[in-house]
Image (tube, rainbow, N blue to C red; front, top):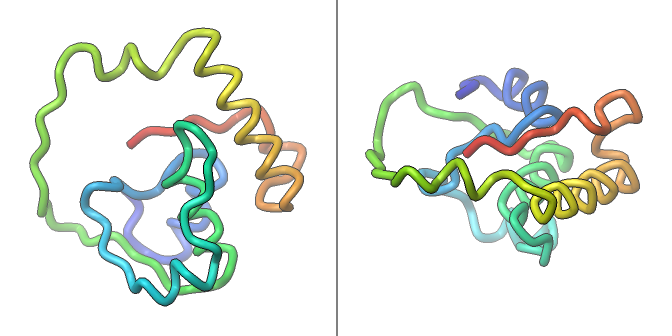
Length: 112
């Protein structure tokens, strides 16, 4: 994962720059950007995009603080026509909100 604020911002137009289960944040910042918004499968990513674009400083530690076990079905949940429709909806929100440009549209991929 990217560690510096600049690297995180650059990464965020291509993929989720955070592992959600390891994130610690100030509740006041999350409230100021509107909190979680119902964007099925992309709530956390959309939240982080809005935090980053509101110019709040963000970073990832280089240390491993969380160990998680995922089963063999984890990656299969991130595919198929249903997922594609959710991804298109998410990208439309990002484009409409000027979080990404037309050249980034269609190139996103959430990896958390």
